[in-house]
Length: 71
Image (cartoon, rainbow, N blue to C red):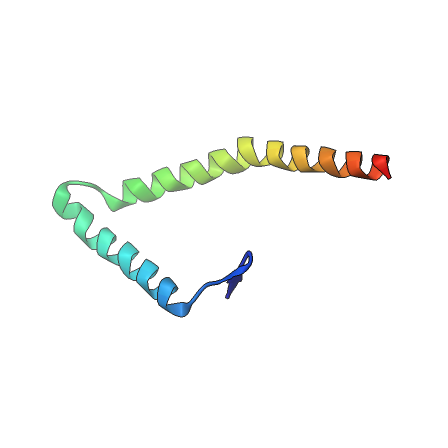
């Protein structure tokens, strides 16, 4: 699988998934609810797509238009 210019090895994906599974089962022993962490991550993703991503798209759209105008 390619991400950017770097090829992601299957070993890396398996290690990442194993890390997530281990965290999911060990966090309750420390008094942390994994469901709360999942909801927090979903809220962060929603906030980023709602407020940050449009500004990034606007920035690149303005750069594209300026490059077209300079030609």
